[in-house]
Image (cartoon, rainbow, N blue to C red; front, side, top):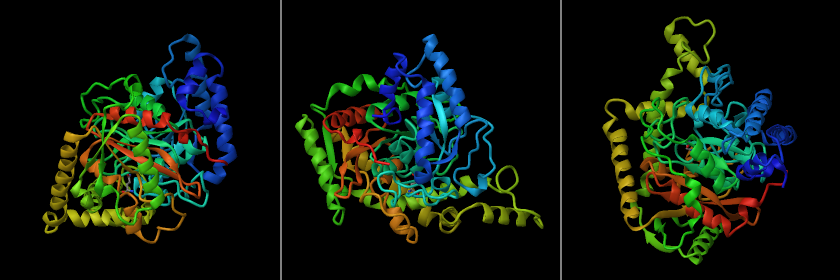
Length: 485
Ligand code: GLN
């Protein structure tokens, strides 16, 4: 395998043994970006000079012996994270000229660990979407089939890992935006428990749902990256005061005796038979390794999509009120008065999907409709969460498909927002309940399109997801397959 295709845990060993330098590795990744990114378009901004400078610093640190696990590893950032001095657009015209004045906490932690930043990755505008087609900077293509979408909203992050344009990347997940793109690109994506990772310096979409997490080539890398970014941050009051376990220590214990729940509501009529077959095969493989498989029920999951499409737009309409053309972001030229400044700045700066969400959210929160929509949605959210509490009394982890189908064609769902929203049908309940969820590769369709399965865990129990995910991965070679580009 080429340097740009190797997972970080292997590269870290090579760096420590001086078989390769971070500068060599970084140059290999930058060269790969030059070769394939005009086809894939994973990046909005490539920070080549910064990367080489960080690599040189990492090499010094590796020489001096105080290297951490990610020192010298090329990491790509979704363009939703503030990285001091670097352009940060959130894939919106609204922030076209915005340079971040400070680091997000996750970015600062990666800097301290000695990671190398390759650049800022494409996404759906303000993380609203499932295909990366809502970006103001053009679409990203799936490295496994360039006619297809890489998932969204973290589609630049998933495509970059699948194409070897970064060793690992960070994404965000509000309703599936890490797990769905991971599933469609044969990568590993983890949404941590709400509160596990700081949201400081992450451009807000829906604050009660947003979490930051890794997209990587394998389960061990996801553990490595989560360990680096997780933990209490005084600048985010929703980040939890909880010790972050050494995930890699417990990861290799095997699944013998673990109880895996299969929710009957996630194997719905009309789902893609190839996806169902791959996921059922994975369940059998885990059983063969000694896991016990139990059927569970999550009866309120059927309300998850409709609940989410009230809660998330409501929070978004409030979060996005700050883009008013006054303090930062796009400002309309020659306004006639203050109202005209607000209206035209927002009208010109936001794309159509963002406008749709702001309108839906504002409507749902308006007096007279609040009780009928927002309050109802919060009640449904409580029921969805209670379903999981009950299921986790019986099982250690829940296994489902990540998506109802494989990557769709570019343009296939852009005219039908409801169809687009339904591609998150299996990922959304996890965010509403605040629990951790991971997607990992479990096969390919006859057309060689990646299939992913999802593991859902108890709150704060990412460790069991790594353990089950790693055990499954060892029995397969999906994670070693690479897209031919
Ligand atoms: N696709 C979902 C949406 O458009 C989820 C997005 C996300 O997780 N950021 O809202």
